[in-house]
Image (cartoon, rainbow, N blue to C red; front, side):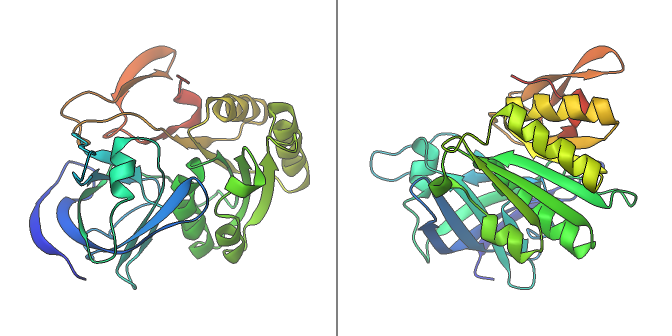
Length: 280
């Protein structure tokens, strides 16, 4: 691991230690016209992760780009044997544009792993992932964990068009049954997604459902889950300042036991019970 200037770790009850470290960029390349894959050399303490957790990245200040706050970013992959931490990201603003300027050999300050990740309960043997766009990045480590636990997994991957569909080959390499849908061919609408999911329930059964991001997918899976009594979890995206629960910037409302509760996405999440989430 090529890292320097390790910083003290933090620990919160029920959550693994949080570490700050300088990691060396191994690669930072485009994967299509919108997304990039960044690979960092990372220490074993940073790689003690769970699917669904995230890191807070200190984006570089360079040229006309002056990002002020850290950027929360879901883990796309963590590989202790290789000493690598992977992030898949879309260049959309000042922070991610600054990240895109990093080259092999540069360093990046990261803080994490942060938050609470996904669960795969012992009785959940047939799993369904449904995600759109960069939400697939958050679910990729869950697919790897499911493979290691010998669970059957189906991934419905949605995007605007075929050229920006991501992670299909990666999921297939893990023996995941992949179903690709796009806006361009008219297969990504909610009615068609529900048709696919209902068919999977009839033919193979689904024990748990997972998603990230999209409100329309959240609403669909909540409805299917209530109809068929299928549990699920969602990883939520939210703007953050500190990433460790102190600033209250990422508070969202949830429904629980008939009441509305407010929780911090960075600390109590970013993974929550599917039925408790309220779309924005």
